[in-house]
Structures are given as structure tokens and as C-alpha cells.
Length: 337
Image (cartoon, helix red, strand yellow):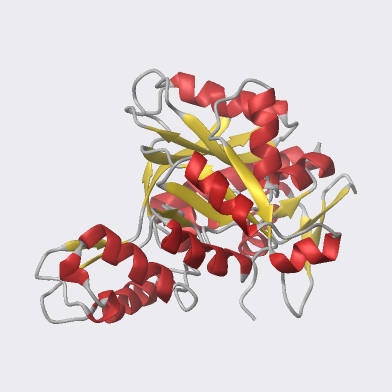
């Protein structure tokens, strides 16, 4: 059984401070750390004994998170969540599809449709019209009970990792792309990209994304990409395959920890403190340069309190892994206190 990322790092790093680690032997996704003092701490997956449960629960709900950020004066996209037919029935409210389309027109198009309570960039859609909205709703409701419709904002996507009021890691995320050779169809290019990422230890899977990829590429590339998955991009042509830049969706990372302007760091720290997070991934979108003072149109997209993105970043390079290991060393010292 392949151990969970956090399990591997705790097993590797805990002996440095004379702590012992027990990992559940079957699935290896949870365990216990016993420090030299006798103090014990627990983890499951990428959840540690750091953040407050109420705030963690809210961060799992994107609409509630945005609502509270706006209430506290933080910049966030406007949006609204709607239940699926199944969930509406379960909670005893009518499913109002007309209200969904009415709200979409008011945003207006293009807009983002995404699962309200899921992460990893799954079923995130850039929607331009009613037909695409219908397809997006089908995709989102196959994964989540709630869809979040959100205004579209253009800009560059960044993840800031905050640990105890300090930005310990920051990186730009760019969407997944493949490069044509004039001979290979898009589906095979995507499969080759998927395999190359998996060989690096990144758990990226596109098996549930083919329709989303096809619609996005056809919209972005135009008529030449008709029947997108069987289209053969010409030699050297780079094709963005999804609208979102999540590393878990195959995106790439550029480390900006040392170059991000202090005003962006301050914003990430402030919103983490507002939600009482000791450890948090803050997703920011800005049309401005990250090295310059914060742009007036910059927004906070999401907060990630349980899976702040260390695993995918760590597996982008040896240097990235070293940085992530240093973050986990700090986590161990905090847990020991």
C-alpha cells in the first residue's frame, strides 16, 4: 500500500526530534506521533491537530467561506450556491432550475460553475451560455449536492501557504497544457501528460474529465478543434486543456515565495487569522504582477484548511520537496509545543 504523503513525511522527519510515529498498517492514511516529552498528536490524511473544527467545516463550503470573507472586508468573487434536485428533495425544498438560469444571466456570462463542497479542481467549468451551463450542472451534480455559480475573474492564480502567521510557501499555478506534434490526437496527448505526472508521484487522473476537456478545448481553440479529443494539434502548438489551474488537475507551479510582494503575504496572513487557521492554503487571483503591490482587482478565491496543496507542489521538483519537508519540520515543532 502506498503511504499517504503526510504519513511518509512524518515517518521520515519525526526521528530528527526524537519523536516516534505509528502509522495504521493497512491504508496508511492516519497515525499517531509520540514526542520525547510523552505528548501525543494525531493526523488523518492531511488533517493535523492544528486548526479549529468550526472554521475547517466552513472552509469546506465555498459559498459560506466567500460570504464570511466579504462580511469581514476581504476581496472575494460574488456568487451563489444552488442545490441539486436530489439534495433539494432530501432537505425539503423545491428544486428551482429556473432560478439557477436566472441568476446565471444576472452575473452575467461567462461565469464559473463548480462544486460547492469539493476540492482538487474537479468539475470546475467556465460557462459561456445556457447550453454550457446545463452541461456544467450535470457534471457538478454528479460530484456534489450543491453548485456554486461565481463571477468570472481573469488573472494569475497563486497559492499562499500560511503557518502561524507566516507565509512559508507561495507559488503560481498555471493550467495544464499539452503540446502538439501534428500526429497525435488530443486524447492521447492528455493521457501521456497524465502518465508523466503520475510517474513524478502526482495523483492526477482525467478519467472523469473527458467531456469537460472536449468542451473547453473546442470553445477555446475554435472550429479547428472540432471533435476536440480526436483533433491533432500541429507541431509545437500548446493546448490548455482545462480552465482551472489546480495542481491536482495537472497544472504546473512556479515558486514565488521569495518574490511575492509583502502586501500579498499580508492579505493571506490576515484572512487566515480571521478564520483562526494556524495552517491554511489561501488561493489568490490577481491581474497584477505578484512582485508589485497588491492589485485593486485581486480576490481571494478559496481557503484550504485540510489539503493545502503541499503534495502536488512537492512532487514538481527536488527543490520543491525540500521546501515542503521544511514546512513539515515546522509543523512537527508546533505540534510538540
